[in-house]
Structures are given as C-alpha cells and as structure tokens.
Length: 185
Image (tube, rainbow, N blue to C red; front, side, top):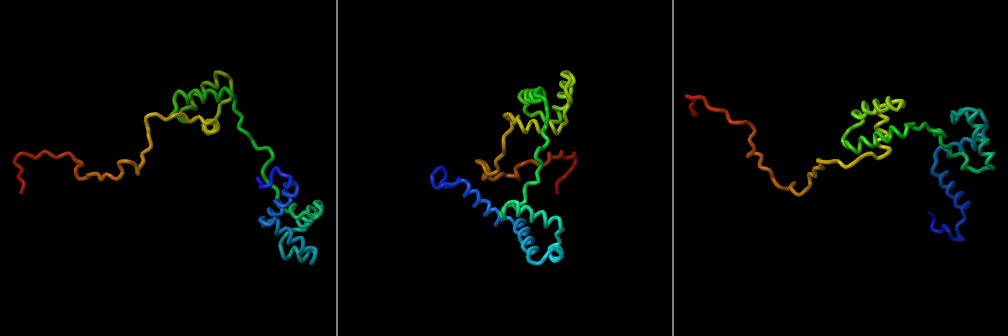
C-alpha cells in the first residue's frame, strides 16, 4: 500500500505509471530491447543484426510493440510465458474423503500403504484408481497431517544437554568367564 492510498492525493493511474517505469528500470531485457530499437533507427537493419545478433522479425516485432503502445517503454517488458490454463489434479470427492478417514483413524499410515486400500475402495464405487504420488498430493493439499502420538522431538540443547555422560561406566561387552586353571599374570 502507498502512504497516500485512500486520500485525495492518491491517483491510481499515475501510481501505476510510476510503478511500471520503475519496473522498466529494473528489467534488463526491456532495456536491451530498447537499445536494439534505438540502434536500428540510427544505423539500419544490417548493422543491428550484425551488432546484436537479433533477427529481422524480432526487431520489427519489438518496434511494433513500442509503436502500438504509443512509445510507452514499459511495453517492452517481457510478458509471462506461463500457460494460461494449467492442468489440475482431478480426483473424486469420495477418494478424498476415503483418504481423510483413513488418515484420521491411522495418522501414521503413509501413501504407499494407503494405495492398496484405496484401490479396493475405487473398485467398489467404480472410480478410476489413483497413483501413490496423487495420494501424497491429496494428503499435502488437504492438510491431512494429524497429531502424532508417542513420538517427540529430541532437542540436543535441552535441559539435560549440559550434563556430562559417564561413558566409561557403560558396559560395552559382557565379561567373559574365566576357564578353570587360568591364572592372571
């Protein structure tokens, strides 16, 4: 948030413009593109291709972007190349509920051991089975981590850490029985 947000001094469009200009100054790719376009205008196509190793089509595409935005240099900032629609995990609600119930009953049961039980359940209800990794994703995505019982974290810097252990008093091997007629010298 900006300090003037919500007051009469805050103008959203002006703030967006300044933020974009700051983004341009941080973006090395956009600076390079502007440099190539300016070099092209001054020295021509052949010299630009030789100097920067950029193809003719790329130079004209960048130039068109700049002209379409009426000289706004922020248009040279590369857009995201991420896909618009990413694949999503599609699992039936019955499968999710089954995994949740199993994890509540047996919180320490892992994805590999849940798999055969889930396969039987999927056959019963007529749903496609899911892989072990998908079961792991279901556990993680729906936060199916329940209280662990009987185990605790050992803190090496805890209350008893400074007490010195007497290692010599520990018996490492059981004593051997001496044979009859054996003498210690």
